[in-house]
Image (cartoon, rainbow, N blue to C red; front, side):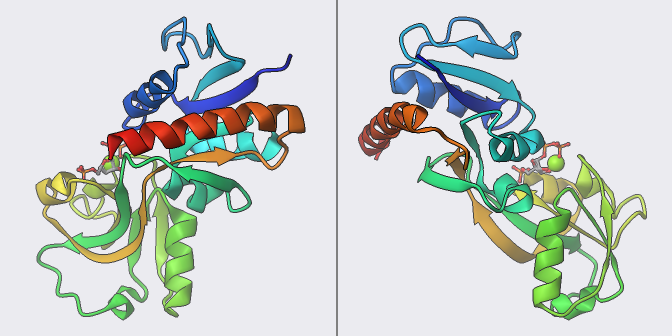
Length: 212
Ligand code: PRP
Ligand code: MG
């Protein structure tokens, strides 16, 4: 019997809660995170520990069948991927922020400005919708430092508690979208694997209900 391949974030904010929900639905994973792949002892499931940003492409290609991933990452990279369940953890928002000292009236103020971000497609979509042209600098982490080192006039990144913005003397001026962890499914899922997924989804629903 084939196994359902589920991707989870290798390390980072989603990992703990992702492993917890798998455990709560009765999927026990044998080996730890040192392995990039682990089999469930009692269920036809394999867990793959992957980098967040790589997961949408793996889903598209059908290399993995399902994933626990932040909706924001799917919006940035995976527009044809199905979300089948919202998981109620890792909520955040994707925001534009500027230095506290910057006078800001509206998104139009960003015309011609430099924006540092790890979410270029998301920002581009938002700017386009508002008829604004700006220069994007794509960086993969520590985005909030960019205005302080003179690399950008604004940033776009995820905000959760707001403490990273605060520590870097930035203020949130636009909220592009809100996000949470979701169960996402490959468009290439086979019928056989769909049956395994149905069981998992059913169990997830009961666990989430119990948590309310
Ligand atoms: C993430 C994100 C923000 C911060 C938001 O960064 O990129 O910088 O968390 O969380 P907060 O609002 O609770 O401060 P992370 O710490 O994962 O590091 P990275 O950006 O360098 O990958
Ligand atoms: Mg960061």
